[in-house]
Length: 310
Image 1 (cartoon, one colour):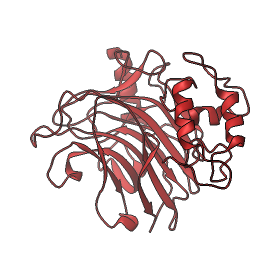
Image 2 (cartoon, one colour):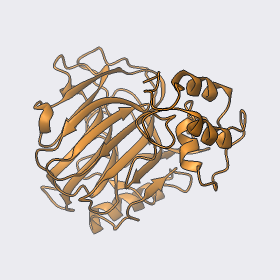
Image 3 (tube, one colour):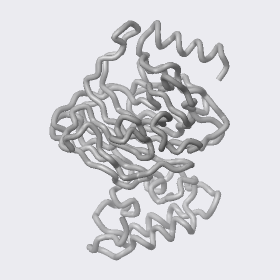
Image 4 (cartoon, one colour):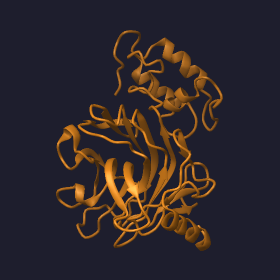
């Protein structure tokens, strides 16, 4: 990102405060720059528009290795009191493994309810749902794994919840799916479409912003790409269960057949089942091919019988 463009984005966030977003559904593949994003007030800088690592196909948003404060940006997706789903792909450089206390690593997907202001105190938090790698979540002060944090601690009752998922080099898909943001709503957290934690809301308020990155130092670089915020998760709990009836049978295979198109050939994005095709693409490589068929086979168990996969 050029210096003049970065300065313009920074001045917009500082002088004008939050800029109205495009609302839900919200999506950004960062191919057209960082125009939807603004500097998180507590962070040093916005995420940087970058083409060194990306998924779709040439650019992503980069959180640069920095000390003492980090890179983070937010987008306004409108207040939500009902169901909301957010996802992003994160590339972990993994040059620093996070095992040294003095060299923490941080990345983050968060849905946040806050008052944003161009002057101190900058941010007043009302609520948040967070999934990422952050030093102070780990009781040992290390940053090797992903953690969950919610503003009200909800039913998990702790400041953080260990997902058990370790960092590794490459792309990961992070997702947060909330049935409702007010008291009583269940929130599910996913990494690479695997359920890694569940919390029940004890309180809750509208979560107006999606934030990528963190206002905390990091001794590794991270890239964010293909972010979406929707009114509902596009995939069922078992991804291959296209009709959501609790099994993987011939009806689901019929949908799979309509998506199957071989390697390096995208499915028909205009078809009625396009969203389900995305759920069948287990390699996140933009096609439904024999590798994805193998994943489907591992789940297939016929009607009225639970799938044979997780």
